[in-house]
Length: 145
Image 1 (spheres, rainbow, N blue to C red):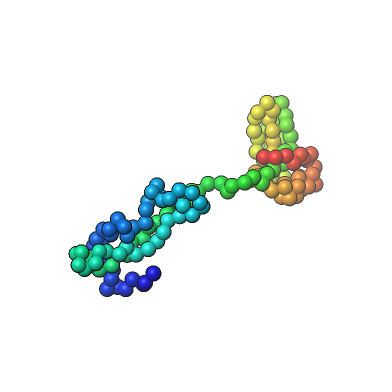
Image 2 (cartoon, rainbow, N blue to C red):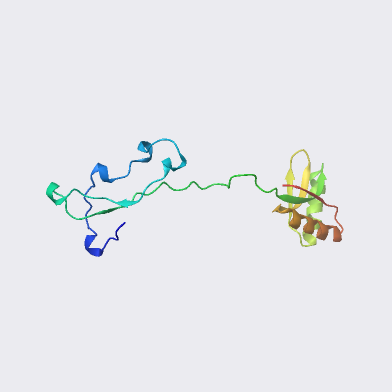
C-alpha cells in the first residue's frame, strides 16, 4: 500500500464508499481459518468525477485478544504440610514453633487444622523447603496445593 503523506492526512474523515471497506467479521465469507482475519488498508474515495477528493487512511482493527489463563494443563503447585491436627490449640502451638524458627506458617481448617509452609511452590522449591524444615526438626509432607 502507498505511504500516507502529511498532505494526505485529513483533519476530518470523509466516509469511504462501502465497496472500499473490508466486510465486518459477521459479513466475512465463511469457512477456512482466514475467514475471521481483519484486513488493513487505505480506503479509495470515489473518483473526482464522482465528487471524491483526497485519500483518507482507514485502519480496521481486530478485537482485542481475550486475557486469561494459558490454554493447556497448568503446572501443579505444592505446599509443605507440617501437621494435620484435630485441636486448634495444638495447630496454633505448632505454628508458633515454626515462626520461632523463622518460617511463615499457614493454618487452615477443613476436617483438620492443617499447618503448612510455602504457598503454591513448584516441586523443586517445595522439596528444598521440606529439607530445610526437616533440618530444623519438623516432620514434613510435600503435597499438591
